[in-house]
Image (cartoon, rainbow, N blue to C red; front, top):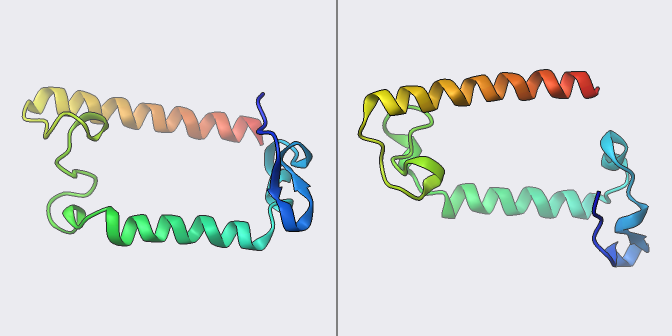
Length: 100
């Protein structure tokens, strides 16, 4: 696997290569790092994410596949895409359980 060169937290002297793989990495990232990630996601959700999700059905943002190709108008293709997403999500859950 690839690890970035340099420091993850220069003030703490923590390098990227010092962070272990897996769940042990959670304990190595300092609190300000977690706060920065939460602030970034919060800003995205609050300001950049828009309010399309407030109206309409859950998960349908009207942006189509990958958010690039506009709304999906074909009902059969949309149903197939949603079923594929459910199947892949279930597979991912089984994979992470297997890794634990």
